[in-house]
Length: 401
Figure 1: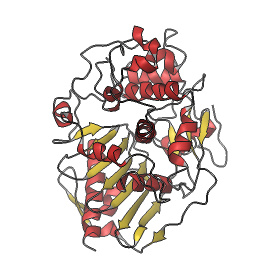
Figure 2: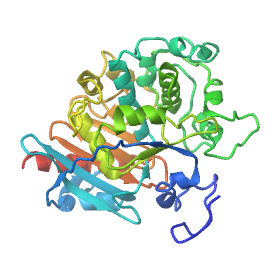
Figure 3: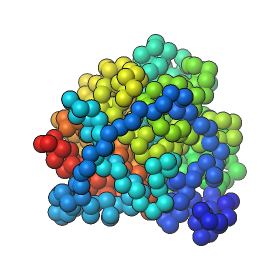
Figure 4: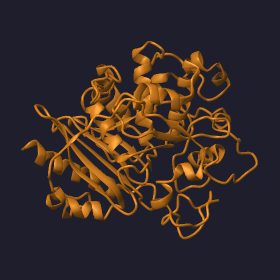
């Protein structure tokens, strides 16, 4: 429990309420004061500067997800925005920040919880290890983690985790306190344990999951897939994820600030959604994706083919997505390597997290946009797709410059 104080909310923060409306604006920016975290170091090299261009896109019209014609500024005002940024990587002049806005108490040095945008950072760590030959995407999980042989993950592959196509039975219904996604939080220590039968660590919980359908079937969004993938990475390297993320990604993208990630009682990270970082550093991460895995510091963070594969997808990625039991609302899209492609015919990639976290990468317009939010509910379709529409409008405007 954290009491009130000069920089505190007006009432104590508890395991019961830290994800509640009215609390999120503070808790999402102070995770290291509430829970145990591990640092993801930015390294020691100076962070390269990025130029700035005066630009005011707030007046641009947006065809909002509910059919109303509004402005970019209205979308940002109506979607619980904590901060948003737009970067344009000009072919001749390089990257410049065109928009950087903060609201409430957030500022350039504020770390903000990324929720499932963390999954995309883990993807880049995985891609680096695949490029080094440390991880084989077609290998069975039990090659790295024999302990999974007695779990529902027996027979599944690394590729199936990356694309969320295992046959594990797992509910991602955030509003159901008994859903597996909420039980996972209980095991991790981010929510009160509702039963003494709930395991006491993340790994113990993952071993309880059982297979309900054939591995390799339709896409179904399951955060546990990323958590098992994080465990596989640690088993294959003998190192903790925070250290790997620092060495392979965060110290190579030109980040200005250290990030952090939540850890449980035995030191396992919340691989699926526990990372916190600044708005500006997320733009640098997105720029690395935009440039095919090459960062602003000229480091090749992941092989170019890893990023290309994420944009293009596998032979049956669209089919697997179209047959998903989930309400994806992205016709023609797919999920690949822990990234969302909302429309396979457009060069746009998304990193998404509940409560309104987003990195938007538009390769056609060479635009990276980032939005960090505190939606009062985990999911809100019109807020999500209105934000995408706003970034599409800005991309179209900048592409014409």
